[in-house]
Image 1: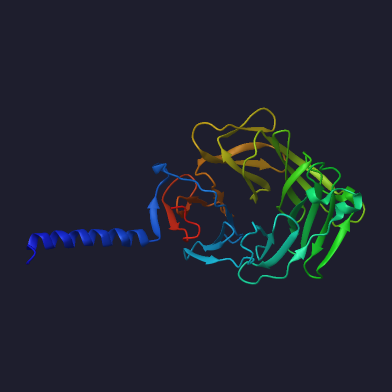
Image 2: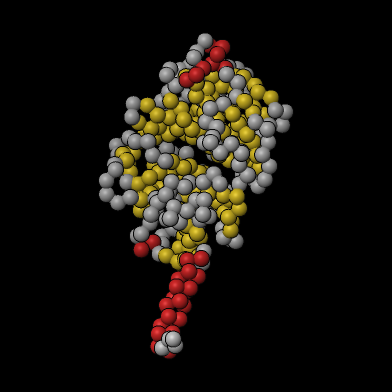
Amino acid sequence: MRVPEKQVNATMLVMFLVLLAACRAMTQERFLTPADNQYKATTVPLVWLHTGKHLLVGDQWLFSVDEKKFSPLTRPEEEKVLWALLLSPDNKQILWFDGKKRLIPGGIEGNINDSIVIPSWLSDKHINITTSVNVVFWLNEHVIFVQQFDAEQPAPYACGYFRIDNEQWTRIPDNACLEPSFLHLFKVSALTDDLFMLYSAGEGLHALDLVKFTPLTQTAATQTLLGEITLDALVPVQTQIQTGNTLAVSLNFPCKLASGKTIRCIEAGKQGQAIYEWSVNTGALKPRWTDLPEGSVLSPDEQRFAWVQADGVCIGKPGGGAVVCTQLPVSLSLQ
């Protein structure tokens, strides 16, 4: 039976529209504007590398901003382990941490080295090591620092460091360990060679301590507190040094500066992100940008933001304008 010409044309039109939609779905770039206000935040964290040309996307991909290309990171083979990724200050090395006592160094693009086991220094104090916690961070590109404590009774601390070049652990005196505002230290970020941000929690509060710290002495503590901020909730925080020796603190919004140095984070209203500027010199804290897409991270040159929206990595300039999104690889896509 011969199909009428009109029906053939209609069928061909439908097929063309389906094909066009498929092609558009396959296209990686799409343009949005902040005014669209259709941001769907995800839990995929982003970290800018110093050059501003690459982003770490979660713990799986390296994204080239110029080429709009994702390259997979070489991960440890044990898939059942929830490996945490720690980027070295020079952005050239990755440290994989199993959250307990194993570390695996590797390159930003390639190799995975042999596993390193963190010593149990708490056993010297006759403390139950089954509840011990290790807080691990890069001191510099050559040294990995570990602070150890008992989760049930955080004080006293024990700490030491591992040198990448000679693969040796060195224990340092307990009074040379970091001293956070609250006993439960859970993260440390290296900002410069001797400037660090300590993240600690206790009594339902979250403290950020900006300190000068020189731990590789064998005598006593060399920590100087430069500033302290208290949050009334545990929220994701990212830190980076900005031009003029100021520190930008990025945290989930809605948060607002209350009395003193306390920031109140209230789970109500519009979801978004705010970046606060914290002066190292004066201790002054003030909002710099507000109402950003949730999870936004500011580029090293402070010229653009990056965030994850629905199924793509999006990049746009402060103050609005065009936003370019690149589709996430299938393993990270939420659709």
